[in-house]
Image (tube, rainbow, N blue to C red; front, top):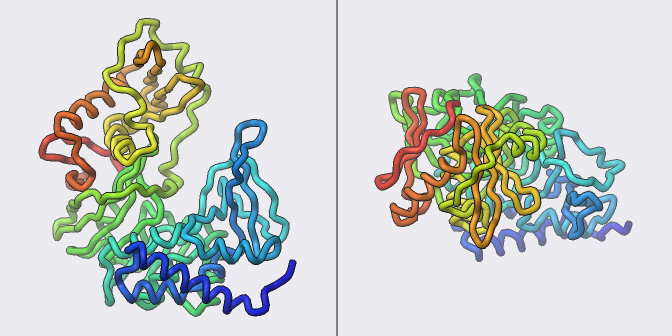
Length: 399
């Protein structure tokens, strides 16, 4: 491998080019955030990462190729300054970047989020100078560094559940001169020693708003969270916390997703064929196609979150042409099978899963297909409800 003559100068030029591109896309409207992006050396936070290859292996698994400075310095540096999410860990196992190996499949458990989304999250949280901030999910530390550059290290606290991840991030942060408060802690419980906070921003997703976060936000403070679930429906919400500890806020637009908090990850459900074998033989015609919640469209992304709120313990998988819904909590299941241009549904167990989803889709259509910004999340008295003026309320799982 041939090293460039001046790698730090190359990194600076790439950083400036990335900031310029983000500004042209409307992401960096605030000059202070643009300066932060131009200043923070992202490559220092990603000594190695994985990129997916085009082809899958013989088992249909994604093949992940390692990229590092030692393997290909030019590619590593250029990719570090692309607006791309860089996967840095699978299945909770920290890679050995002295001997990186190709991976087949696996669940990503840590990454460096694409810079445009990092800046968007900080901006959407309405952070300003003087705010005390809790970041949940340090990850590589790049997002933390941007906040420190923008606001100063003194008011930033960042927590990470994985001690090895935090150690790597801490080394990079301190090496770049940033000194936020760092701790190994579970984001479900926030970080009481540094509370209370003016802003709380999570870089992982939750099935419901953790009560500890409400308790650790100052009255008038704001919490920016990604809500998710086992159907992999996602929504962003900016909650304003009241004096009495209740909170509410509108869902935000856009299609973003984050890895689940590890305690909120979907459980394994076994063999779909075993679940299908116990269903009644009698089927009915579906009122709605499963593509309404599974298609690669912005509306389907939104609908998947609404449907998930109706069946919070269900998971969806497709085997051949058959779509399976499986609920490991209640023991309910359903299958949707294509037939003559329509879909046939078989359901069993105490919860009629697809019937619950269809009721949400019916209400959504009757309300003229409202977008996410028209929904409000209310958190009070231990309950959490998604509400809309023209649709029935949808409860989130109890935290």
